[in-house]
Length: 354
Image 1 (cartoon, one colour):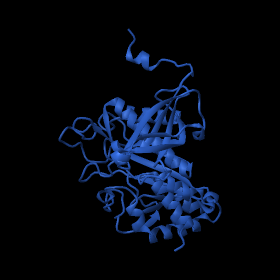
Image 2 (cartoon, one colour):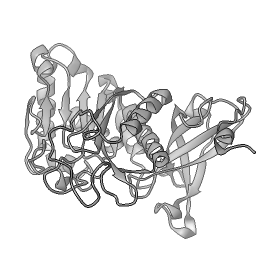
Image 3 (cartoon, rainbow, N blue to C red):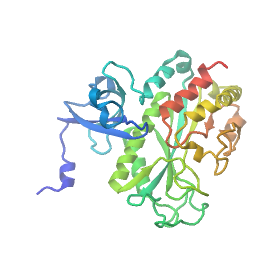
Image 4 (cartoon, helix red, strand yellow):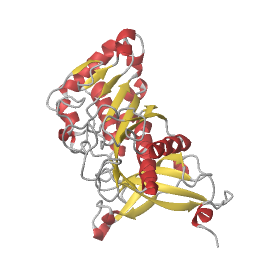
């Protein structure tokens, strides 16, 4: 008798290719996927057929008119099936070709396609924080059930059985993301024990958001295998514990060239003028995180500073010294939609005229 592992590792000798179509569900944060067989390798999403799913089962369509159409948008190598098998990031439309309300990619694509934005070659570095939870009790990994570990301090980038919990999951995700072709640039343990971070980028325009969603999907699959629950809650544990964000590093071509620091300061000024609009688009439950404590700015006050992790916007010492570079928007929550955040920052800093 064959074992499950043997069957899962069967070689199809490239006679059949499996494409896992991935999309965002009705909550705006849940990921859904299903697979289909293709006759041969595919390298361009335009070569892939559109597909459909039952939107009434994902909170995205009524039962009497439930068909939602998937448009393939980005392809990644599949680290689970391997070979020529692929992961496909899709967005969702009505049968008439209208983006459904939870499809935030379509509006973002229009912003990134505008000539002024495209010419600025926007780069993003997305710092995705997340928390690993014990499956049965929904309590952080490594924490005593119903209790607490020692106070924060030794856990950030920590090493040791009493400081770092879930490292094998984190490293498996790191390698799987690199295999997939995601520009994942690093990982680290975070301030709250059981909390980790990975970084995507610098990546150009909308591809940064496509890559972050793909990396989230891969992480969700790996935690499924490990029997651990993945949380993007911006404040998973109340009290004197750090929340979870998705700090968004940003630069344009003008910011990276000589004189770029003045461009950065003008961009930050515009971000301040639209602070409320950005906060409203930066993730659910973010008010529990942006309290002015635990390395955050108060959500009701806009601020910026050099090397200041308690500000809304942080400018690095290197950027100040070199007179050009990038800045970090520290306001987005861990559960933010990267299509919304990246396109909104580009819109405000490049297209918006106060």
